[in-house]
Image (cartoon, rainbow, N blue to C red; front, side, top):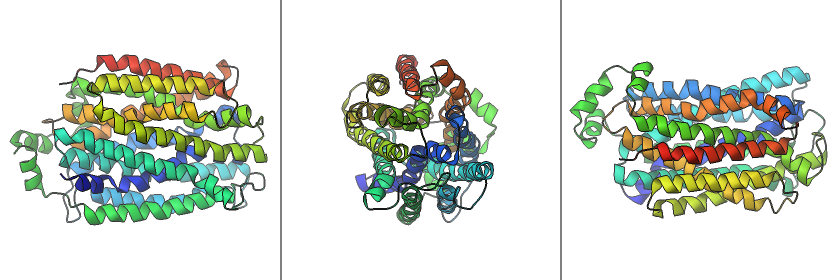
Length: 430
């Protein structure tokens, strides 16, 4: 495929990632503002990966068997994006409808559940489109382009509240109400999301079944496998060893990033603004600054994503990137200057670039000839979701063990990434 063919294949990911960035940067802030206790914050993060582990295998399995005039993966992409747009207009208003604190939190949780379900439904088809339509030699480039668009979308989504506050949109609100800077950020993100997805739907034409089979090697064998059992247990039982070994690395990586998303807001507010009062102007300023830091992380990731394809050994590139991220997480614990925090978040961005591109390159290459690409990639998403669920479930207990200091959870994240780097050695690349 041409460069622009690969670009169009993933362009809608830019909009999807804006939605995901707004969610990941603001969920802890939203629920803390609504009245959640810091020891309970991680529990609110169970829903997103839980929905992912349910939705993505279903989308993958169903799309493997879907052939219609609109394509194979694209119908799921468009429906997911449409639902995400609706929910993005509801979630940040959880505290604006005059409900009690408990009712507002329940409303927010339900909205979060639907948001993450729809984002997962829109996100997974992009991975599958690359698996379907890109050859092995170009997959590294295709996933690097996807990583670039992902990080560019993250950059935009992360800085929205900060920029809107600079433009004069209110960054504080009555107790229990989400500031307008956050609410309007979700509105703008929703508009960009649907426009980007419409562009992809317009530009990308998926192949009909016959052409798909011919491109994938006349794979009579693959076609038979596609038509055979799609039982998830059978597929997992027959999965290549690389699937599981990369999954082990994934466990440590996503365990770490779950704690970044959950506790960065509290870390920055306490270390740089000297406050833990969620109703204070300082806490809300720290919330905006977290978006800036995540944007810096995205910039680091974009730069590093351009470097990764030029490192001869993929395994070395993967492990080295995770170690850099581990150093960045550890440094966050001890820095009390909001600008100096740019350095560790650039390092964290290196790890993020590798996490977004390397696993899918290893796994999709290992899956050639196995059939059921969509189902396998949906199941592989479990290696993203399960560690987040585990991390969220034990987050409150771990926080208590490290002295109930949110910045100490960054040390936990650092150790987890280093363990992930060690686990890279178990991967055997063909």
